[in-house]
Length: 203
Length: 159
Ligand code: FES
Ligand code: FES
Image (cartoon, each protein chain N blue to C red):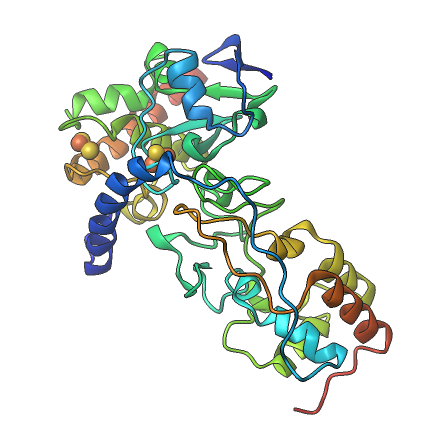
């Protein structure tokens, strides 16, 4: 309903998408995402491994610095002026669940996982260094009063977090990129780091 | 598989071979309710918007299997009750080609449930469907009108 330049551009794009969409419906892929690739980063300590994942777009897109989610492989601002809303799950008329359900949708290319939504503003990771993210994540004033145990559970068991290794395909059937550390290796690294005292390097 | 739900107040079910196929297909082709439209098929335009348990949902991106036990409303359901949104859309003669309008009306009805008296800003932020004919100006007027009608009827009911 806005007539800003960006919205008009978006609308023009949508007109394009409308026509492409009809054609692409018959050719969608039903396969899940590509297989996990091993980490090629030389920093093999648990903290570095964890941070290679947490700074990946699959995490940061929903831990944005502002009130708009990011999306896609280039982490552009979510189309259609989608906004955080009061509780991180969208606005009154449409919530995240207007489009995103509990699982990936291979017909529409819309990703999904349980409780799809944004991390709170106090947990914005976009633009932050691994050390800054770690400090913020372990600070109960900013992490919603979570203990080390709560954080460990969020990072290793939350279906929305683990979705990063099963991100599905986009509307053209292209697999979304997964984090650079395999899931099992990441889970072990999180446990080692937190159970080892969650020590954050100086810089 | 058989999926059972309530649609526009009536118990209903569809038989589908793929539970992941879009609910939109079941509504249009299975139940022959053609008011809900297919625009993009990728949750981008809003033409397929319906209500599930009172929330606006884009049915092109909603697997039919998830509708089990749910309460669904489509534009036909809104028409049957002469919902304030239907009245306002007629009064303001909103549609041009009309294709996008059921989706806008469903999105508006969902917003008015949560926010009975939206400002222009609320409308800008909440109604993010796409109209290729550019009827946005009349849609905005009709949303305000629908809000008026709805508020008046709720005052009358409470008297
Ligand atoms: S057809 Fe569902 S959003 Fe366009
Ligand atoms: S009235 Fe034609 S697309 Fe909206």
